[in-house]
Amino acid sequence: MRRIDLPPLWLLGSALLAWAQGRYLSLGLSFGGDWAQFLGGLLVGAGLLLMLLAVYELRRQRTTVMPHRVPDRLVQSGIYSRSRNPIYLGDVLVLGGLILRFDAVLALPLLPILTWVLERRFIVPEEDRMRRKYRADFARYEQKVRRWV
Image (cartoon, rainbow, N blue to C red):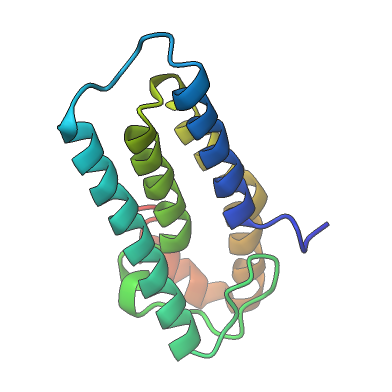
């Protein structure tokens, strides 16, 4: 189950729901205009950039990107000096951008739902594993760097 329980699949599922809502169940609701398309593109781009920066830093530090594994190192440099979870933040930004691009007004509740799923299924267990492995170092990191932003 762990092999298929991955954040990109949760993002994909949420994005497909948003697309379907925007395409088939708009109920005449719209964000209206080019500003939503532009902002949506910016959010998608920012989310992808965050993910790329995070993966780059994890690879540079020679540790795992996989969410169910214990990392070999506590990465605190690069984008991880600003956010403890930049990949998950990127997922939420990408979904927000796609909702705007798909003009899926009724899909907005997917943002807090995805955030909740990511926190409960991935972030909390990951941080618990790192807390056990890195103890004082993780405690200092947790005090210094916020979970999301």
